[in-house]
Length: 104
Image (tube, rainbow, N blue to C red; front, side):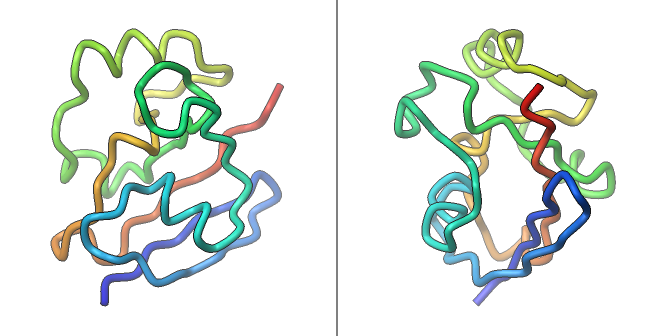
């Protein structure tokens, strides 16, 4: 099974099993990682904002216009910011690293 790593604001890393087909948001919730996801993955908020490690950013699909619009609402937006609900785990993403942004 693929794995991925969540890096908290303080640098603490959590490497977890990341089942293929689940979103980063769903994987976070499965492992009690502190990502809100207020809209439950319906692309109606930016509370699942994560910052993708630059080494992985280009391996992801391009964000949709709807995702870009929601990201505009996120606090602490960075060049590799994405919504966790829009990154779906695949075998090719085994080892993915994302950082949780500061909450402001």
